[in-house]
Length: 359
Image (cartoon, rainbow, N blue to C red; front, side, top):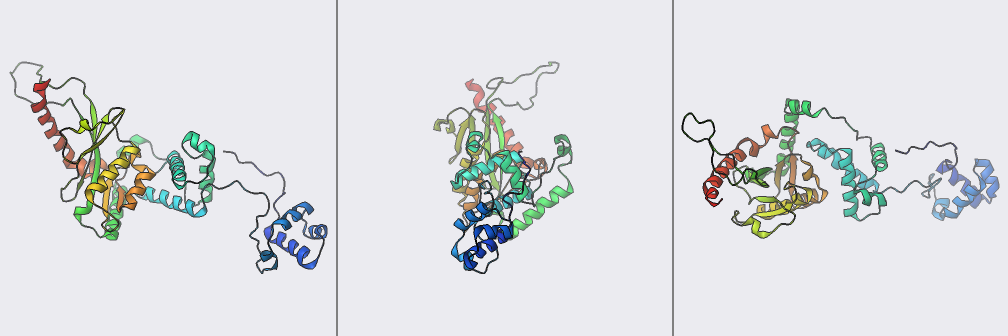
């Protein structure tokens, strides 16, 4: 980051001194040079200030002028109110275990600036994120923010499920439930899982003495499809959302899927930010939620869930998002604990029974 140190005191005359000198000239008919000498202000500096200062400031009682004094600072991209909102958002995401990194904050700031249609440096468009200098000065302007160095991943995984993290999660959950005043039918858990066209066969009974036993599957290497599901606390679910490993999505890919299913496609077949926004629209459509009928959505803190468009859309439609602590979904997420494993086992057996004859 560029952090240039001043080598002179030019342009550092206090604003109230500038206003006093201007009043001496305008109200007491003192010469500009004389007033400048009395207040230790260069003549040209005082002359420029007199051209800008207003009559309301000269004849008013305020000690400080609203007219800018000294060198003009670099233009701030966001207003003070907008930066305050951004600070509150960053703190809120940290409280619910999303924990934005500096890179994610810079990307978020760029996306927000685009959505607000405000002017920003061309380099932001080139890099699709805010600059490093902007981030550094943003942190300096907001003393409530600090950059923390996380523990090593392996250690975090080992100690992620601890009393402090879990306690904070349930504290946040209690606060949200008290604020929303909702029942179990309005509490949803969302998770993604990968399903493949090559299933792991269940154990079978075979002839004793044979070391190798086989069962027909569709092929030896399969295609992985991501399945996003959401279930509420009384067991109702919305239609699934599929992400196929293809360049373009075609409606025939959903042939035979449950009624109301939706889908998308990308080359990896994994959830991305743009697909999560599409899933959010799918979720709102099938839950019928609104600000008058709010719901709570519990999910993990994956990067794809941090899109500003998605979070804004959910907020506008009455959806409150609460994330599980990092590395704790295997213990806390209901879909991980009970639903997904049984569903995938049943899916695998049905696939093997119904599809093997077609290969």
